[in-house]
Figure 1 (cartoon, rainbow, N blue to C red):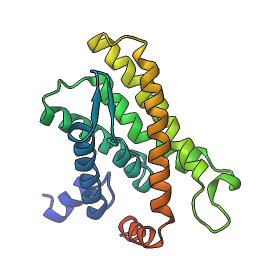
Figure 2: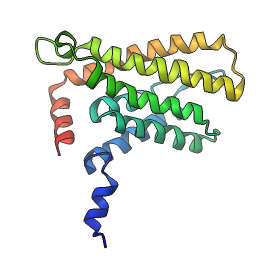
Figure 3: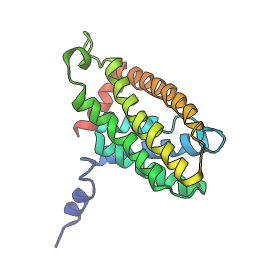
Figure 4: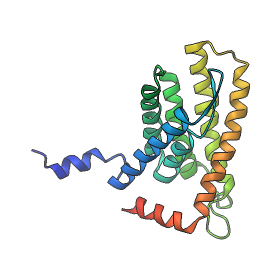
Length: 195
């Protein structure tokens, strides 16, 4: 028979700690609000907003698995709350937007020139590469295919999705980089991650 403590630890295994799980839930809610309720729709296939910023933050701050969980959860709950049909291809795109930046940031961009600047803070270029790769795969490619397959979105619209993805990647990178330059934010983030 499992005790309540054992069950609780098994439930948060992906997140590591209850604090990271709670922070991830907040980022999920923020993604839903920014993406489904505070974005600017342009037609049926383009939305200008910051829905992916909390997902990317979860991935870079807490790891790729947590980012993927935040991305998928935000997509599914957001669709249900807003009355959209859940499109599995778009959900896979959301998963990639959550999975890729943390993986690239932690594992693939490892040269000493890209890791830290001279003052010990993360390089903007390393963040940008991590975010851009996730947008290229998750949003520009997979979500565009999902929109084409499910709704017959014209392929010409993908050009606008690419431009939107580039601008969003640039904006998200800059916001995350500015947060990581703030000593107070980094200190509090360290407390959350190390608990």
